[in-house]
Length: 157
Length: 189
Image (spheres, rainbow over the protein chains, first blue to last red):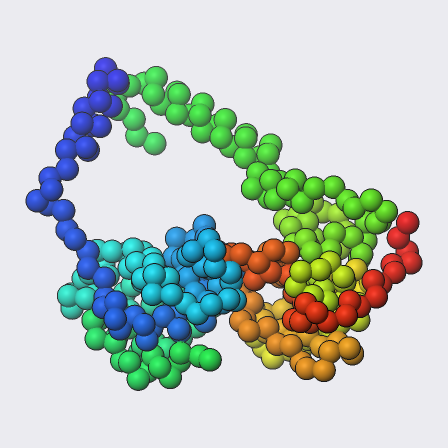
């Protein structure tokens, strides 16, 4: 009885309707070139989100490298690394990120903003504050139109 | 916990599994930490356990509240070498650590290149910024990135640089520079 119930549940779960699948869009990849330096410097050290087991994984020159032949602290961040970082950020809450991009959800409701502001438990503390350049950079990018000037001001060295 | 009325044995099995999992967790401690400690290997021959032992290893794996409980609990600790590809310790390097509150703590490396701050003396507020100076090096050497949460330098600065390691902490970039004399640790065998 229990075996057949389990089988029935398994069958029901595996019957995915491809028409019902939602493709979660990420924010703009070109604009992320301006966002990435802040994310790398603030979040991507090897002991934080540059640590491979972490769900939100940040790649870059001073942190984790994507290519096994690169070394931390070596050559500049590559386009592939920026892309991998962006996908990692986007994959934290794909549906909610897509809702933010579509204007249905405020960026402040996303975990990445709550953690970054320190409003949600975050071992790294508050890295940005509502309305400052770092915050404007992140929330505007997540909303689909990055404030590039704000991003460039917090890009770091 | 609710169970399906026609599956009473499932409830019994589930409880047994949960009890076994709880027992296993209590009995084994932290298997990931145990694995990290085991992978550090044994002590170097001729080096006593103490401030000079295990240079280049991530000190806080053992020297933390979660560690093996032997020796002092440390908040920040690491090893400094002369060159990126040699094991010559940099004795007498000054390490200035600035925490998020602006407090600065200064320590010096010993004959093994090791330095440490005990948690009893200072528990810094992360992130930290670090710079190193040495009497034989003219410039101040600041760490390029901040330290977000990890007090053991070697966790990110493994001896070999790679995609997830910045390599050892060193003071002289030029491989052709003369080697410094190897310091003698007089309290070792």
